[in-house]
Amino acid sequence: MKLMARILSVFLAIPLLMFVFSVSASASAVSTAGTKTYTVTVKTADVADAGTNSKIQIKLHGNNGDAGWFDLNGSSSDPFERNAVDKDIFTLSDLGTVKTLEIFSDGSGNKSGWKVEYIKVNDGTNTWFFYYNNWIGENGAQIVTFTK
Image 1 (cartoon, rainbow, N blue to C red):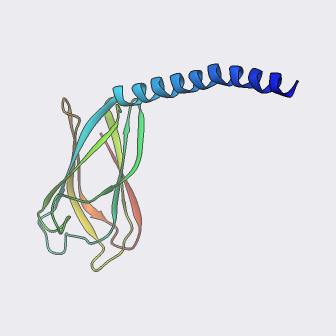
Image 2 (image 1 turned 90 degrees about the horizontal axis):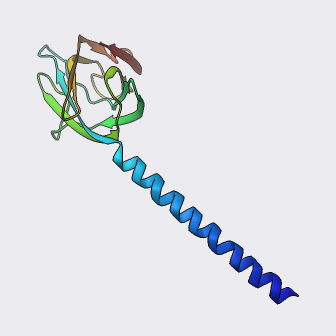
């Protein structure tokens, strides 16, 4: 009787495993099919002490949802310095039209204040500009929302 129960459980497990593998394969196909590559360009203002060494993060919001928080590391060895243009590239789910973004500065490091002139987001087809020209993180950690 125990042998029969084991054989039966094996036969029941095989279709279940096939179903699980089928679902996970189709889920991964869906998640990669709906992605886009986003280039985020940040321009630091050209004024005294405009640069920062603080940790900077971004969160993009589109009409298809938001992307969560991502570190901005810039495209140079010393990003976000006076008059610098820094780029980061992210592969994310298709956000649709980018309507809003949030920037977080942890306010750390020497001269934590950062004067952002603009942030540009490009998805390979569309480009959105968010002009700010103001300070972020001068008095510690801060989140600023940029809206189109």
